[in-house]
Each structure stands twice: as structure tokens, then as C-alpha cells.
Length: 418
Image 1 (cartoon, rainbow, N blue to C red):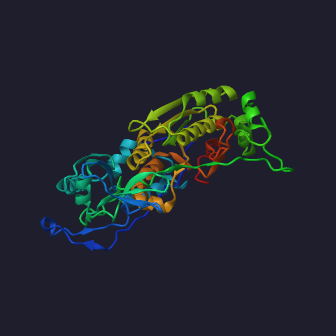
Image 2 (cartoon, helix red, strand yellow):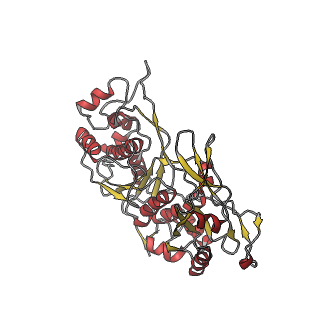
């Protein structure tokens, strides 16, 4: 089933990440001599923080949570559809798919799911499939034996104790092309908020953003906190032309913004900010896998993301999808956003360096999720590094602009672009 997307068609080219299988082949177990195994490079590789001290093997009975992600069926057809959806000359241009239709057309085949389940089950790693993944929880000893790699504990220089494999997991060659990732084999590869505790100090003789140029007036508390050295969100929004968009009616009305969060927002902080700037957005929290662990840095980031989205698009509905900052939680949070398909624009300020993403196996695992979002007409924006003064979210520097994307799509008829 195809469908329209309302008054702002989304323009997002699919994020396609390629991965090829390696040629290294290990000895197959005796009971599976006809099905050799391989350590595929797209799967999680060993990763230990520099300077970490070995702490011995992970206790044999410690539960390990894994997600085995699966490739789409008809991958060539998916790439062809993506090209047509974003080609203005194509009759399929912006004829977005619904999530159910995407699953029907490109979901993993029953044969592939059964084969991967049979392999895992034969190793004592039983799990239930859901969409493009199979969730497995098993003792560390079973995971290590079944995937052919010990799990070792390390203490990082910052005191964090985690674990990593000592080699890429072994996968039968018969299912290697069906498995795009195995998440949960490394607890060090966490995503980080793109937040730097560094003041945005105005330079003498250099004109800064104009206060209230976007039509918003900060409360006295925020103005006092910012003083003459720090910029408020509305001032920075004005520097990017947000005021002209709002004056033209491009305020996100009827639209939903999804925020990807691995931190827990503070409702009191958000309400205080909204009152300060006179904002009335509807804001909802959607907890994934029980929600994230509360940390000061995570809360600052989640607060800031919500507050700047409110400031840029005061007419939009906002859903903050909050999940645990674990390998499986990070994936499940994206999965929740994509399968719900409630947000036309999705913004994230959480990420990791590409080498770490490759090491954790996330590159291959996430590809299909982002391709599905593209077929549904969802725009995904990823933040660059921002700064915050460390004194509270009323005087921070925003680092992603959803309102500009909403207006750009409206002004250009939804054509793809940056």
C-alpha cells in the first residue's frame, strides 16, 4: 500500500551501508562439517578502550542480551524503489510505503528466518524473531561457545567495567548473507550525546545573533543566566533564519517531530523552558525497553533536544523516544521510531565514531532501518557537535535544526536536498 505524506513530503535519500563477507574460514564443528563457518567482517569485532586492564572472563552464568539482525529480501528491488521514490520524474515519486507494506515487500524470507533460528537454536541460543531481528538472551558461556569467541571483561581508564569478544563471531556460510549484524557482544561501544561543555562566548567586535528576531522573547531568568556572553536558543535560531520561517507560517503545524534519545528528559526542566519562552507544544515521552538509565549528561542532552525542537517548530507535536544506551536498546529505539512511523522528521544528537560503529556491528545492523524510514518518507537529521555552558538548558547552543528542514521541504515541493 502506498500513501501520501501530507503537505510537507519528505526528502531523504536512503542511508545505504555496504558490507561484504570476509574470506577467513574456521574449522566447522563435526556435526556441521558440510556447512563451514566464517568470521564475517560486518559483524562485531573485538574492541577494548585504550589503556583498559583485563579483568578475566565474563562469569559463565551472566545473561547476555543479543540482537541478530537480518537482511531484507529482494535487496535489489529495495534499492530500485528508493531511487524511484526520490526521482521527481518517476511515477513512484513520493508514493511512500506504510510500515506493514514495507515488511510484506522486503521483510526477511521465512526460509532465511528459519535457517538463522535453526543455527542459533542448535547452539543453545534460542530467540524469537520480530521484524528484521531475532532477540536472544543466554548465559555468557553459551554465547561464547555458540559464536566461537570468548567474552572478556576489562576495566577502562575511566573506571567503567565492560566486556568484549576476542574475535568476530563465527557464522555458518549458509546464513552469513542473511545476518547483517549481531549486537550486544561489546558493552563499550555506547552512543554518546554530541554535547561539549564549552561556553559559546561572544567575540568583541563581532555581531552576535539578534535577540527576539525569531519572534520569541526569553523570560528574565534566561536572559540573566545568559548575560552578555552566552546565546539563548531563540537568538541562535534567529541567526539561522528561524524567525523568517515562523513569520511565514512555517512553524511545524500538523507535523510530528521524533527525537531519538538514549537519555531521560526531565519534565520539570522542559515545562520551565516552555513557560519561559511561551511555548505550547504537545510533548510526549515514549519509553523503549523500559527507558534509559538517568544520568546528568543524558538528561541535559534530552532536555536540550526537546527544547530546541519546541523553539524551532512551536506548532509541532514532539515525541521523545527514550531507550537504554546499550547495543540492543539503541537499535530498539530506532526500530520503535521507524515502525511507528508517527514522525515526519526525526532528529538525533546521539552517535559514535564510524570506527566504533563498525566495531560494534551497528553499520550493517542499522542499514535496513534507515532504508525503511526512507521508503516511508521520514527525514532523519543527525546533529553535529554542539556546545553547552554547563549552567542549564536555558543558555545552550542548539546543534540541529528541524524547522529549517520542514520549511525547506515546503518551499521546494519536497524535492530531495541537503
